[in-house]
Length: 113
Length: 114
Image 1: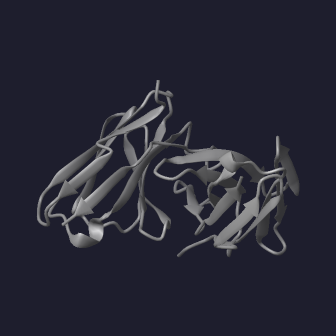
Image 2: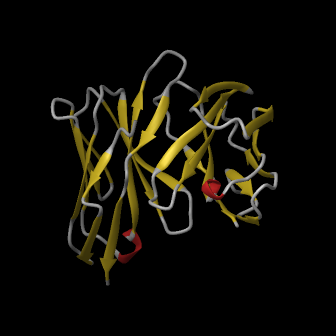
């Protein structure tokens, strides 16, 4: 079954503003990852946060993880037009040999210049 | 050099045909995957291979048969194509199968079944 659900489904902001996307999941996880997908392209890994971490930063990206609420958020600060893309969270679950990454439904971010 | 490359980028074919999508990674990774992305952008894992061995098969119809001749290649063959197979198929790789590695994706193959 689908693991991650993202909110909002679509977000439109002006350049320079911050963008926040949320991800909720259902079962225990080992780590949570965020990916970006530009139109017509493959997904690109942005950041990984482990289940024992609460916050992580990478450049203009800030990710938080609340395992008690089974939720994560991705904050992009000072957004740029080039940040326009779909953003997906993905949860990694361990199940013996069948470790796998399950993707959420994605948030479509449009940054207006 | 493209890290994960898949061909073709676009594939248009008739119902009932058989087609293949090829994938190669030059990252030296041990694990490769096939994902299917539907029209609503939902991305679902189909298969994963670790060092040429099938690890995950997510209840994919047996019309889909992955083949891994070596750990750098994972091809996807689809028999008797159906309208519902229309989607974007992504190949990906990761260093290992421990679940804590990031995935590197190819640019996708858009399959349209008419």
